[in-house]
Length: 101
Image (cartoon, rainbow, N blue to C red; front, top):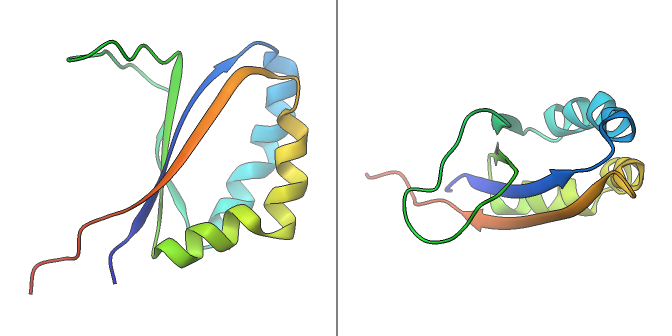
């Protein structure tokens, strides 16, 4: 079963409020079997016109586990903490490729 990835782009406009979200989100990600691969950091557009302010990438063991995390009670509550802290917060869930046999 291939891993799944949550790819997020955001523009944080209220860092103090966003800190409340970040104080709780990592524990919920870990409890759901996920891990952060990218969380901010240096980036640059190499092709196209995509210019995100901040990027995060999370990996989960499966698409279903990532979806269960997103829809789960814990993350639903935690998501509410970031309301009003970002200009935009875009997230996509994508299934990875199956490991070669």
